Image (cartoon, rainbow, N blue to C red; front, side):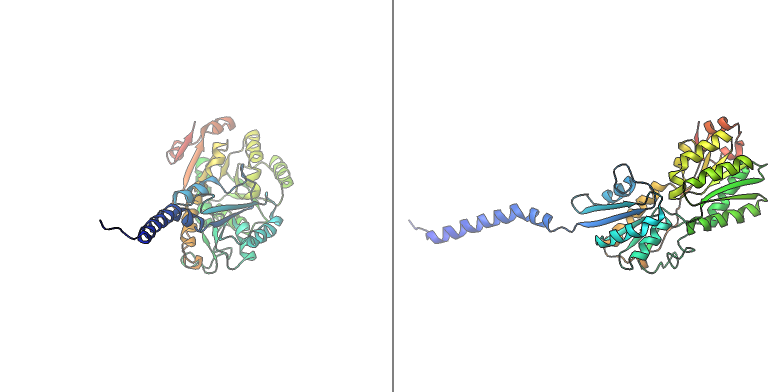
Length: 335
């Protein structure tokens, strides 16, 4: 009988144990060395219920393979409609050395851009014209470290005014409420003014800078009643939207809003993109940037789908009959 050397057996056993060990711990080692990205969200609006970035944004990233706690962590900061807080919040995110900042709204994007010229910034959802406000150079070639979603302010404003006028053919004066501290919203107001002139409608300008200004605007409309009202949505007006909707209902003033969720909450009508769609689109931008794309070379986008929503319950409450031809154009009618 031929005997194998004991040393050779020990070598084989050792090699097998080594391969088992490597096979056992390789996945854990790979997981422990996996890159964990830090995605920041800066908003001029109010805090989300869980203090995290909006759910549609996180859902969009999860669908692209980003699992919270494994390969992505979130940092969210909210200014609660106090624009003066944004620079400090943006600087805080920069100090955390995040990989990308999602800026919700024009003021947030401006604050983020002023805080860093190197960390990529994605605007979402669209809030104002990013080209006109100087955030990006052009849609095709944004330049710098900012890209994302932007509005078609002039076209959107004209369309909203057209719908409001079609719903109320006899309307001669329309009150416009907007945040006059926000350059992007002021540009949108100017577009509304231009559209109103084309429709031979007088604009009643009611610029707002802080929550107390809403009471002043309501008092003005009570004294000088408009035929209709137009609310330009940003962080300030969004946080106070319930007051506006309740005032419009009490005074029986037809109102046009921008995002559809305000109509679902009791507003009369809206025309605009769905913010959830834009947050999900922002997730695609983030994914491309984290994989190496440069913001300067990622074309900015305008929303491709706009929704016209009408609340017939609100129309009945204020005694307004929406013409059938207008209702036929609606994507959603709340009855």
